[in-house]
Image (cartoon, rainbow, N blue to C red):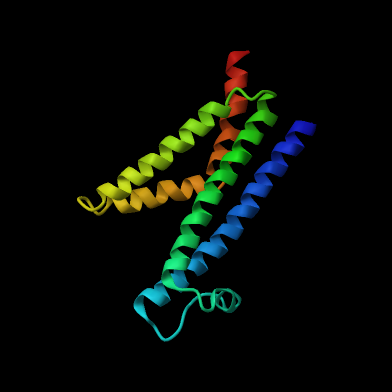
Length: 152
């Protein structure tokens, strides 16, 4: 019972962080678009506009990539913790880290390939987004208990 509560708390933290990520990135993208196109106003939330006042395009773009990397790292950390809670061991840690790194490298490869085949950009973005949201946490909640049952 205690493991289920801890697992639920980890997933809840992941979902909450996903909601915060959505707010941050939506408004970051609005502000970046505003600066790129030189529009008279930004669609970003007024509080976010105040926070980003004076920031240039390069700074906001750098912030966006740093936040993306941080979100991938935090979601990976939560996934490792969740796997530990659900299985009672750290046996999945290397697989989760390797899988995340491979998915991130694939997203980068797809992004670079999008110059030749533009639809690949959307695939790269979706893959990178999946790494920044609690997608892996939900997969673990579904798969690990099934894997444990199939072994017994």
